[in-house]
Length: 146
View 1 (cartoon, rainbow, N blue to C red):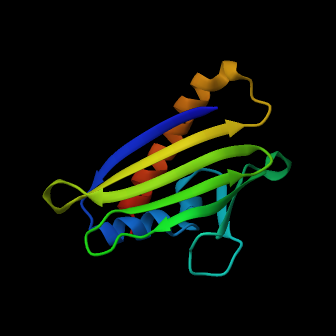
View 2: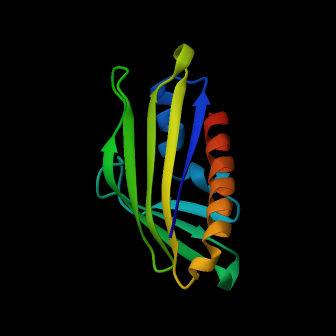
View 3: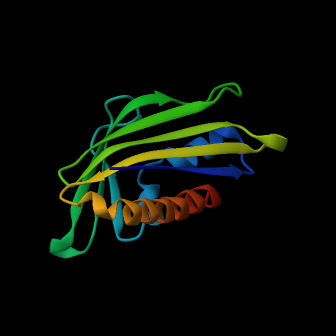
């Protein structure tokens, strides 16, 4: 099990940063070899199920997540989302926070607890580094693209 966090500051209003980070299918374009679908009807709320299918052909797996906290930003107040990872391969949770930052910008904090089934603890450092790299790039892409 590894836990890591990322911080970014984006030149976007809170609501726009939130939209870009929580339009789940957009994550598929930001994470390599991944397609993201929403298995429950809109709008997103607690109980929404998001499935990220990662890999190629028979070397693919589903990262099934359920939204357990859904607090969109309102009237300048911060927003927070928590997803519980409940797949057969990937477990843990992810939290996305957006809050007012300096100069009218938005501060984004992404926290993740990641557990990969059958991966020994000796690989925690590699998993942490890979997670920070992959999710850091994904957050950057999501915030840059409208």
